[in-house]
Length: 291
Ligand SMILES: C[S@@+](CC[C@H](N)C(=O)[O-])C[C@H]1O[C@@H](n2cnc3c(N)ncnc32)[C@H](O)[C@@H]1O
Image 1: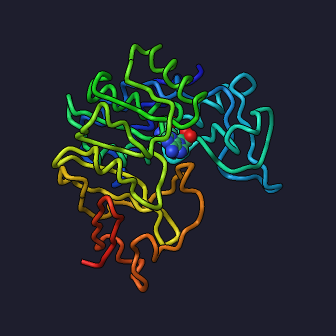
Image 2: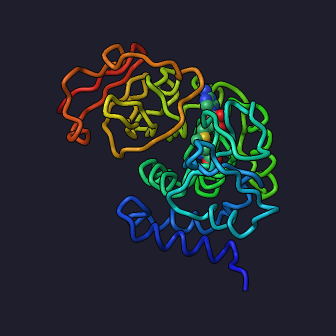
């Protein structure tokens, strides 16, 4: 008998329950994960993230290999690549290019949302809608009417809005530059980015309610992104620290490499002690320092 999506979802959830970076006791998140069909958001053709020996990424085509496709959807640690080179490479075969959109891995999304800890009724801003899957999890938790999500690629935004509506979830989906946030619906109790930044955009800080929480992957000098958790002071400033090591694709306008010194990172930090670092951010920039 073919294994069902529901069974794979339950298995994936069980696996993440056992991981210290998984649900970690967040019962609401476990429930929300089980309530949303991840497969509904995954395009029929996706690239596998690890390259083959020839350097190309294999294409998994649902029509040709439905079981492999579904299994890949529910591997907790795997992000499936949904766009290469900003969409210039059609999903017609194995290919190589820069990853520009994906469905984030279940494990990473669960970690992000656990640290975000949105409560029912919270006003939430998400940056980087992608497939709309993370948006759906958030919508189930806080109510779609409380949620704004911004995606820079208009085709992806339209597809995600359609997929969400098919599940009767209708958050405000905006095609635009998420670095600007969406002031008209702010301030927000929670802001989450699923694309990484080198510099925390001042608009996000300005749109964060007093005591609101911002979770975003921030580029670091340590060879990975670090997930920053900041609490807003309601006047465009925020303080906090790092809660996890992660890997994300960069927001479009921050792809260009900049020196870490210029971005508020002092020289000589001990990479092994990233958990001890403190972050202060405001309209004039960010400052990272040892506690
Ligand atoms: C890792 S994907 C997000 C995946 C999403 N969490 C999901 O589950 O499907 C990152 C997304 O951020 C988008 N993005 C990049 N720069 C952006 C920007 N400045 N504003 C809004 N979205 C942006 C990309 O187009 C991409 O779809």
